[in-house]
Image 1 (cartoon, one colour):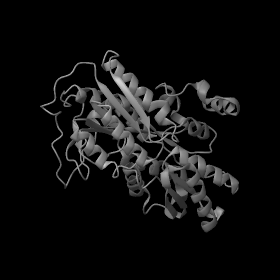
Image 2 (cartoon, helix red, strand yellow):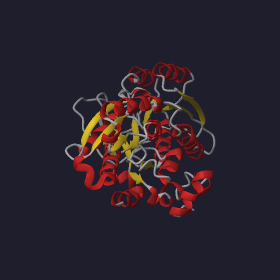
Image 3 (cartoon, one colour):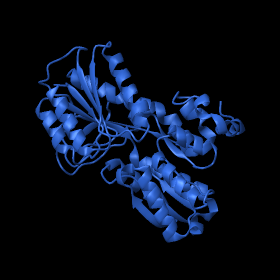
Amino acid sequence: MRRAAVALAAGAMAVSLAACGSAEEAGGDTNDSDSSAAAKGDDIKVGLLLPENKTARYEKFDRPLIEKKIKELTNNKAEIQYNNARQDANLQAQQVDTMITNKVDVLILDAVDAKAIKNSVQKAVDQGIKVVAYDRLAEGPISAYTSFDNEEVGRTQGEALLQALGDKAADAQIVMMNGSVTDPNAAQFKSGAHSVLDGKVKIGREFDTKEWSPDNANSNMEAAISALGKSKIAGVYSANDGMAGGIITALKAAGIDDIPVTGQDAELAAVQRIITDEQFMSVYKSYPQEAEVAAEMAVALAKGEDLGSIAKDKVSSGSAQDVPSVLVPVVSLTKENINDTVIKDGIYTAAEICTGNYKAACDEIGIK
């Protein structure tokens, strides 16, 4: 739990802890908002595009949190236009076109496919619309970026899995279930996890899971069980909670119910699986902090203001250099710190977690 404690202590200092990226390919200088931009008041128009609705966080947390903060920052005068791409990159490109037609002042964009969206980002910028890349580092001339330290997410998951395996790790065989190749975050989670797991445990099978789909993760896990044998799998690295649900269903169907499975996003179903020992851990990410930063960036850019007071660090992509950025720390969520994380931060109440069959488990570990 040392990592969790450190990360919790660091939560209030996300800006100062943000990691700094490096770049080889030059892009436009995005340190400041465009000096030619006319200063605006609170009457701004903000576009918000989120990538999918299979993962619970986007509609439950990200959207309402971002919209609430934008309203607070603009005395309730901002107009917010919203769309969800439902994991369809072509649909998201059309949604960007609609935002351009509607003449939004700034766009908060969580890309379905970070590379495929590049031309759409360029089109928006050509029309004078600033783009804040949210959660995923979209390609193109973005003006700002906020997310979590994604390699640290992978390292946190990998270290938790090794902790769960304990002395058995050296002789253990695991399955790795990574996210979608169209999501740059997935590659960073994967890299972080490998940096911890490689050489410490045998990876029997590894998958990149199309569209982060729980159904695809379920099928992949069934294939791994068939190939390796159910008695030969000691644990599963799952990059997020949705896939963990599909993985655990496959494990149960095969009669495997006593091995650690990781996750990410602290979804309610995952928290309930954690308290009943079906899932070992998740990664809790402070969506309120990430959402508020995105809203602050978007409002500042729409008003033609400098980002210096918000974003102290910079990252770079293949098409943009030194993008003002804020990376938010993460926490390893286990049975031991549910009270101090998702309940303390108001993500869930004990009543929401401890329903029906989960009440006895909550009472046993003191969730309140």
